Length: 119
Image (tube, rainbow, N blue to C red; front, side):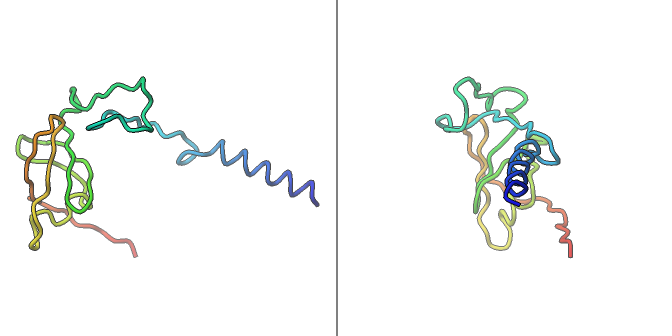
């Protein structure tokens, strides 16, 4: 019984490492840049591409928390609903939007799609 239990634990540990990613795959995302000092989790060999094409169109959005968005026109940023939730609406202040050049803009929601909640 002890041998079977030990074998089960070893298999569980190995299988967990083999299938560590989502659906058994590794996470292909990489850090493309940061503002300020290099974060501790980014290797020294990783270049900061934040203010280089094509990443120059990515912005940081702050309100209650922070998130990212991307310019889709000179005056419009596309982001997720939870990032810009109620920016400039329902008595809330506008969001703070920072470009990769650290320029600062105020922004508000121009259009919001429906959030569909699953039962």
